[in-house]
Image 1 (cartoon, rainbow, N blue to C red):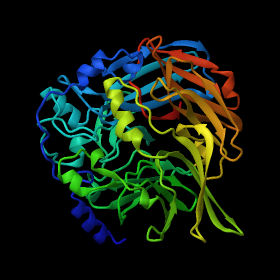
Image 2: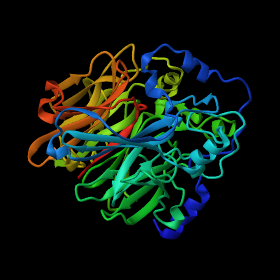
Image 3: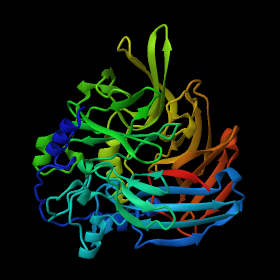
Image 4: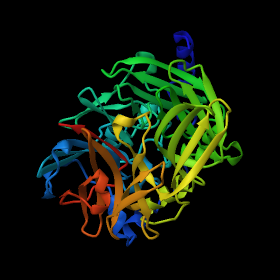
Length: 499
C-alpha cells in the first residue's frame, strides 16, 4: 500500500478506531459495588481494587529459583475496578496495574504500580469516571476526545529496548520504565500513526522482529505493523476487512500472518445508539470462523478460509510446511462454542458472582492454502492462556503451557498444564481447591527442558504465589515458590526478561 493511501485511510479513521458517537447513559442507581461488597465469595479479592501503588516488597521464598529464571517477570492486568462508589461492569475495564517480580535465587521482590494513563490521571483527580469503557457506559460521561483518552493499558506487556510497553486493544502502547515502573507516555511509532490501535498480543520472531496488528472496528480496517529488533518501525499499513470481528490475538509463521476471526461482528448502529463497545458486537454464526492469512512480505497477498463458528481469545502458535497435499499452516488456539464468557462470565465476576459459560478447549487447526480447505481437532484439555517456548514462535512446536481444570464453583482455572498438541498427551499440576491460576510462561534454559513460571491467587490464605516448575516434570510440583504477604488483582498477561 502506498504511503499516501495509508495516510488517507488513517485520516478517515480519525485516530478513533474503537469509537463512534456516544449517547449519554441514563442516570440511576448502580448496585454493582453494593453487590460486590455483599458477596460472600472469598475469591472476590482477585477482583478488588488496590487503593494505590504497591511498594517493593520481599516475598517469602521456599526452595531456590533456578539460575535460568534469574531476571524479571513483568505482569499486567485490570486493577482499578471502582472509583467514587461506582464499579465497572466488566473485568476488562479496570485501569491497568503493571507488576514486576525480580527473581534472584532465594530472593524475590515484587512491586506494582498503576499505569498513569491520561484517563486514569484525569479520573482519579475528578474522583469519578469520565469516559466509557470496553463493557461499561458509566452515567454522565462525555464523548471521548481520542482513542487514548479511554486507554486503560491493562492487557499485556512487551519488553522492548530496555523499556516495557503496556498494551491495550484500542489505542497506543504506553511506555513504562522497566526499573521503576514509572509511566513515560504513549509510544508513537510514526506521526501519522498516532492513536492508532496497537494490539495486546504482538509476536516476536526468533530473529527479534516484532509483528502486531490493530482493529479499527468502526472503519472495518485491520492495521498491520512490522518492527525491527532494535525497535524501529519498518512498515505499517491498513487493510480492509468486511464484517469486522473482535480479534484479540493472532499468530505468525515464517512466511505468513494468521488471524482467526470469530463471528462476533461490530455493528456501527448499535454503537451509535449508545451501546458499550462490547455490546455493539453481534454474534453471527453464519459467517463461521474466518481464517485470514496474510503474506509477510507482501501484505496485498491475502487469503480467507473458513472454519466452523466458534469464539477465541488466544492463540498458541502456528507453523507451516510444504507437502504433496499443498502448503499447510498448523495453528493451535483456545476455542469456545460461543462468546458467552465475554458477555456474561467476565461481567458477573465484577459482582462477585460465578456464572458458567461454555468450556474453552485447546484446538488444533490445519489450513491448506492450495485447496482452501480448513480442518480442526479439539483436544480433551480445557484451556486458556496458552504459551510456548519463545524460541519456537512461528516454527514447528509440540508443547503448549496453559491453564486448565475448570472448577464449577470458581471463575477461571485451578491447574497449570503442559500439552503435546500433536499427540494430545498432557501433564498438569493442580494448585488445590482454593486457588485461581494466572498465565504461566515458558523460560528457556539452553538445550535443557526449561522452566515454567507463573502466579496464582491463593484466596484460602489471601496471598499471591509465584511458582517455578521444571517444564518436563510439571506434575511433580514447584521447585520453588515465592509467597507475597498480600493478594494481587487477577491479571492477564506477562513476559519474562532474563537478568
